[in-house]
Image (spheres, rainbow over the protein chains, first blue to last red):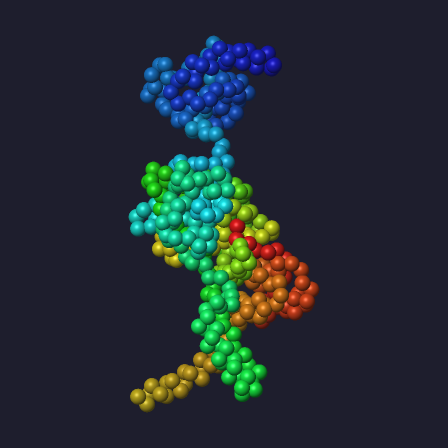
Length: 332
Length: 94
């Protein structure tokens, strides 16, 4: 056996160059020959090709011979072989699942590409693309995000187009007029010896359904309409209890989970002590960390079910995609 | 006109009766009704619908950290639906 391998190694090393020159051949190696999809015991030279083409369609110099110096060969289709690139790197064109961010934030995840008025736009979170409400329409969006070395203008991929404002919990009002009016009421209460006192508050925060925003690419050629390590989306679906899900994100890459709760109301902490309440969310187990926000969440059939935006050490909170699409007026 | 009044006079009490006998409310309705008082308890950060350890639909109350007082104030069930406490940790935008 060892002799057989040594012999075939020698043959491969003298013939490697001429094999790699042939059309579509992307790799050569030694393996067991496969016949009709099953492994045989014959050791052979394996030529991996981008695409299998019928022998008649190839010229003699492109056709992989059935044997090289008496050693059998096999042709296997592997597709194009790409270097694995970390999602924190720079991608052009840019797929879903990679680092992205507004110029003023650290980094989040480019969820996926969606349609807005016939144009492909980037879908991610408000807190990734619009700095948690603190942004202007037209602000620069960098890929990779600033934390991953993205800088303006070299890594300027898109401009903020639209965001759904996040409504944070009630905080004391700073309106001086309202405060003056209230002190008069309270003075009145004192005068009539009532124990009631009034307090100024901003309008009670509305419940949120989504943390979502979109950005339009500067250049249509930068759109790669698929998700890193997953592939193209196959439509949308409604998240249900017990559904198996997956995502591809900037920090933890490809991970899987299961929808453990639906109809979830949750209080989510944002920076600076701000809290926002979200309703009708999906909840899964641990499948994300900081920087994964904005990831597209898919079911087993690669249908889009949600937009990941928050979590703890043990849970992940996901917006329902139907709410995201209706709030932003976008579609697949 | 008189006929309509008579019909209404018959239907409206029947509707009220239907409500009283009514199908038991859905878990979504029960959750919605009790959620505000759950959120008023310290350390409650989430309320959702999931499964209890026996695989029955349950209202899951999430706490950012253990709080025996809050846990003792939460009922074991509401209107027939089990209430399950889970320590979920602080939920942060990621």
